[in-house]
Length: 217
Length: 170
Image (tube, rainbow over all chains, first blue to last red; front, side, top):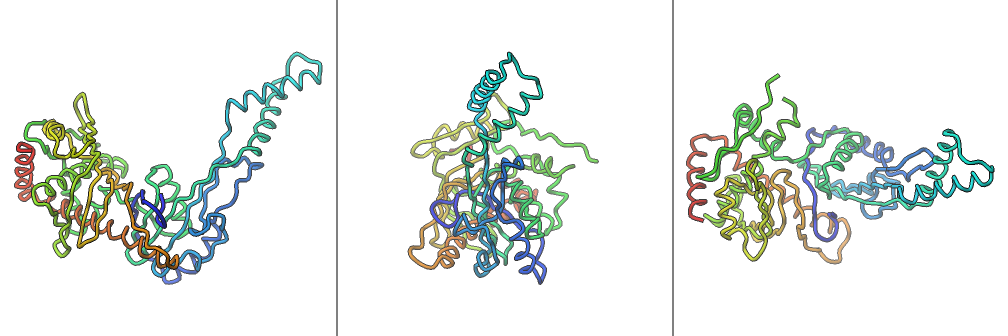
């Protein structure tokens, strides 16, 4: 859900390292490298992910001046996906098999012939299927290192963390309660206290909450 | 222990934090985060989702006019359930946010951000992003205060007694 307009939904993240002095050069180079590219169906790609201009999702020719707004980096993460409708695939395949058998005057196809036909039908259908497109907005405060990302999906979060690290050469960490608590506890020299912390019963009548402790390595 | 295991094992912190916010908001109206920062007004709206890690019915979702003050909320708390997700109103120094917060992930949703009107894109982005970053700092400040209390055994014992009292009298 967007940062630039309407209601916001998503997650907070944090960049763990400080930026090197030449960060603008790194960003400029890597933004182009990790910009969105359309799906290449011939290569078997069913998903393509990359950065786009936050103001124009069709603009993937990124330069720093399109993404840097004062102390903010703002980008769109575009994800295109292609999914084959299995019912249509099976029906089309049956039709093509029938046609081929009629043409050849035979009763059945060899396994190899069937596989070749399957690949052809799959590719033909994929070429005619429009990809679904989603753009998730991101804003990074370069002073504080806090990043807003307009999606709460854990799966997409993993994609974001990888792409972000490859593009900006820094680590992105989700603002989960444990990470936030750990950072606070480490600053106060209480990291061990946090490790040993167990749930408290908030009800005067309920049993103590059980947490499975993993064995120490 | 792996990071994923630690995240899972300490996920209770998020639910305890949300329940603690609820307690402080009902008791004091305002909740103090970091000492140098202004207190935050918090009001629980609905829906709210409470859960427990044990029992036959582990999740209670309460909707309606004022689910936070309903008898069902009291029952859920007495059963040992904690607040996992809630729609709430937060206010700090005249700035108000209405949003849903998930305690386990700190994901937010349905957060209304005012449209700054006709102005250059960069200015509009700066204003909206600034409101969102302020929210992150405010929530983070409240959570830091909770963690400070939580790791202070003596203060937490006092706080927990007060929480038990609140649950009993709700």
